[in-house]
Image (cartoon, rainbow, N blue to C red; front, side):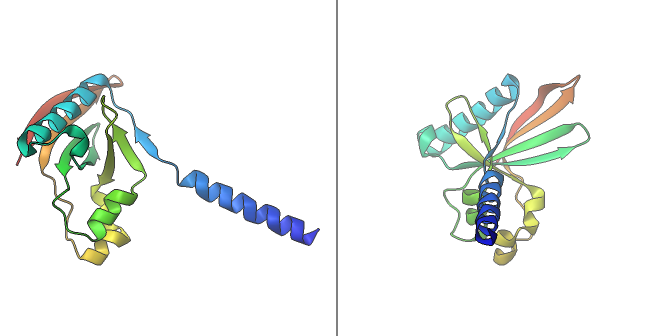
Length: 147
């Protein structure tokens, strides 16, 4: 009986751990998705690559009923903690063409992966999208290239 309880507890813990590892998919209104697509198109044109060849990630910054999205390309990054964080992130957003984009936050500067690289800040550059939320609706109020 004792072995059966131990096996049951172990199985329960493993299933909880697997459930906690599932992807978190961020869903945005169509105007935000359209702006993300414009940013991806800009990178494809700038780097002369197909969209599915791009390695894009997003930095999300939220404050006071608005948030900012910084789309950045990471194919040039050296191996290390920052790249490990992007590849292992379970936070993602998806554009219209089903490109899955890892999401990080500025607070990720405190993650073990980045601390190991001694990076002092998360860069806020690339294709910029500012979104405000009014009456529960997301509204893009600014986009720009911060290259």
